[in-house]
Image 1 (tube, one colour):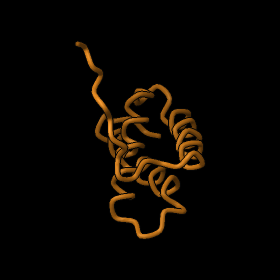
Image 2 (tube, rainbow, N blue to C red):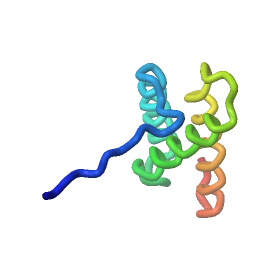
Image 3 (cartoon, one colour):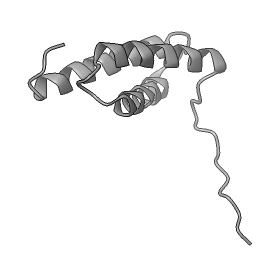
Length: 86
């Protein structure tokens, strides 16, 4: 019998509103770093940043905004390492 694995929710799954905000953030970051960093990598970094800030947050109202800012800093650092200017 072939059963699909059951995935349990992550401790800090974004709400629907947060997911919309994260998608808008991903779109902004993808435009800002167009041609420098792959869109999939940007989305992975953004969700990783969200998980990181959610792990340390006591209030979750601004998690997408904080994740976007954190991701932007990472992306600027990556672009600098590659010798690109944003």
